[in-house]
Image (cartoon, rainbow, N blue to C red; front, side, top):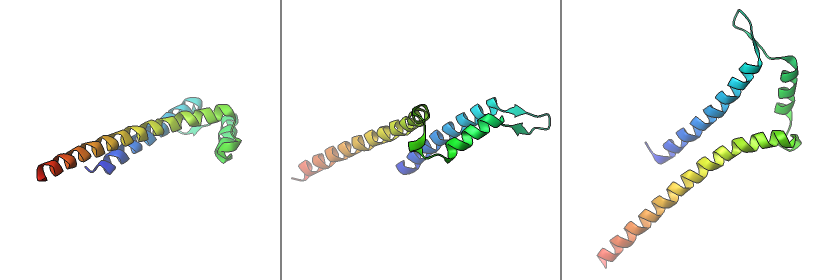
Amino acid sequence: MPKTDEFREKVAALCHQQWSGWMEYLLEKSYWNHDGTVIIPFPLGVRWRNQANAPYTDLSEEEKDSDRAEADKFIALFEEELEAITQDDERLDDLLADTLDELI
């Protein structure tokens, strides 16, 4: 599997983790009916709709902190990938230098 595909899968797994965490929270706060339908309590529905419609800059600091915590997970993943790329580049530089030394 190409490295870009591997990284894509890591990002997709993180996206799923974030989505599934949100869904667990939403369903935990909701009411389940006997027929399998789910009701989100009105105050939470209004709050979440307002948050969804608000630009990031208009969120409260607490709401921004929650988004920042999620962003930090992506940053860590990107930094890990960048470190791996950097190490690969350094190994390639060493291999090229060794090859040039043998040719000279």
